Amino acid sequence: MKNSAPLPHNRIALVEDHARLAALVERGLAASGIAVDRYQTLESAWHGIAAQSYAIAVVDRGLPDGDGLDLVRRLRSAGCRTPCLMLTSRDALHDRVDGLDAGADDYLPKPFALEELSARVRALMRRPPEIRDSRLIHAGLCVDPEQGSMECGEERVSLSTAELQIIICLVRAAGRTVRREALEQAAWGISEAVTPNALDVAIHRLRKKLAAIDSGLFLVNLRNRGFALQVSDAAQ
Image (tube, rainbow, N blue to C red; front, side, top):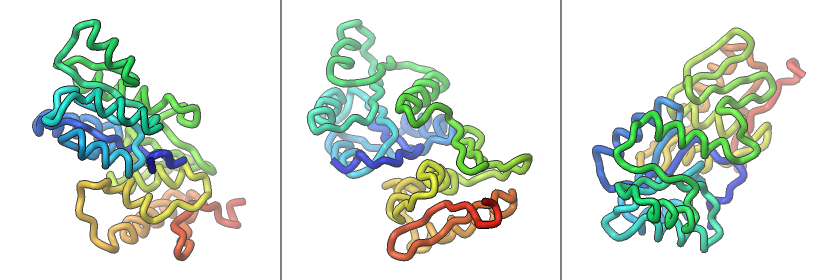
């Protein structure tokens, strides 16, 4: 599977066929700086999660083409270790046990408070050892996903949703090159139509914002390879 990329971003897969609930979850997670790609069936989720790199998957058990646990079992059998949070209207103990035995990492019965869902999602996203804090720091630059901002010293600027996801990828790369396709996936996922120059526009705005807070960091375009966040010679 392709989803074992070393640079996870703040984008999750939501496997939920109920449009209103999915919209509420998406808005609730956006407040924590977490972007969402929505899938409405097991089959579309299987192909999407196999092709993309997601921080976690939030999976409803009751889907039009089957039980969400079947998706989790299929992912685990294929070697996918993406953390999975199950949503279900079934609250019996044996249902929760079945979910955990199938490879799920957490279980949240409906109805649930969006605050609790957001907290559980953030907790699962912190599980990998390289992600100890929701904030990310690189060469004096601090990115705060929950505030949707980045800062250096006492200077702070707000970020759009796309800008936030791009800078998260670049900061986690710690100076390594991130492919253009990976940045586009992080910023807009699979659900939005993106113009050919959308990434270039976002990168241009990020460069201006990095300069505005005197970060001493530059977004370098490495032709035919991607972009990297590098420290200027003067800042070293």
